[in-house]
Length: 183
Image 1 (spheres, one colour):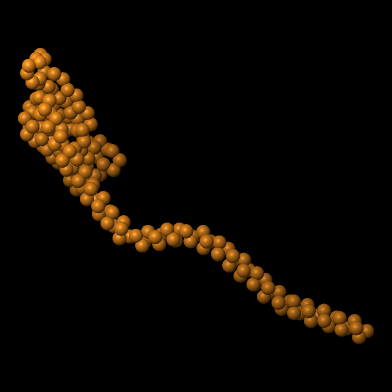
Image 2: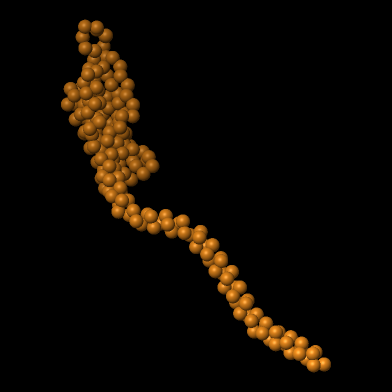
């Protein structure tokens, strides 16, 4: 009988110890599973954080690039602060001056209403001139140095009068130009 009580006492002691350790084991298991889950989340965020940290480290470079891009945009397009009509009139005057200085007769020049082109207003200008081919080439060659940029969209030439091999042929030219203004 003594042996039976000895086993019963051990059993009760083990059950009591297990009852006391069970909440600790369950708590440890919960902490371990949450720790594993959070390590997975941190592992997912680590590449994003590294990219963000790399961008933060290169902030000065990006700011310098932004300044360069804004300077280049100022050379290519009219600023947002300038009115569309004023931008069109300025481009019209620059084109008129270029072609007049090249000794071409300006028949007509017209600024068309602006069209939306992405983040820009595209202002088209139609021009009709008369003169010789060399003068037209000279005027078109001087367009490359303009700032803001004047883009040649289309051009068409036709002869004026009879063709005489011994003389310089007079041509009529029709051009369509575009300038851009930041919206």
